[in-house]
Image (cartoon, rainbow, N blue to C red; front, side):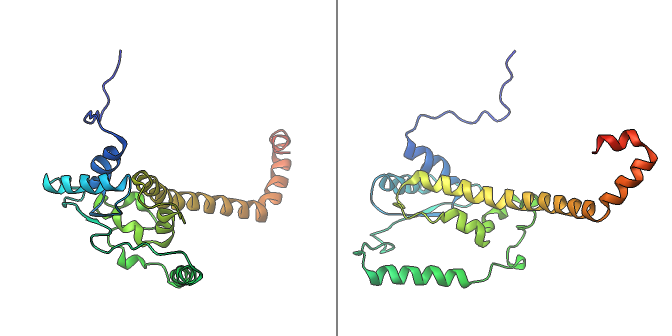
Length: 202
């Protein structure tokens, strides 16, 4: 007997750009800026379509989009030593900045993101390591729409899993410390009390 899925969703026929931009990015982002190269051109059109249809994202807001060249958001320049030096200087400056204190993260908890309200999850990108996971030090073309989803997955994984595994490793380190301090004495006491059980730990 087959069981119907709890959240069956809505079946659609779409290409890759539509799945990424119209059905995903417009639902999780407040705005999008696109550079007019394939496949980003269609992504901008789909954002505009979502705005015209008055579709709301998961935060209850409408989406906005902008075309890179039209708004002078992006500008192509020839690669030179000066351009690379300016880029490296800017990157190094960002590395000097401190992380965002918890008091500015609102209801988003950096220590326990799983307890945060859905509407505040966007604040996770205010935490340096999560933002670094989003950009991924990727120097490839930023117009590839599918990369936005992959980077978002990397950022969410970093935000959620690192605190969990840090807590687990902390507990293991604490146990190891206890064993190092009192393990030998407890084994000696166990040997006197019950030699049979002691043999199990040898």
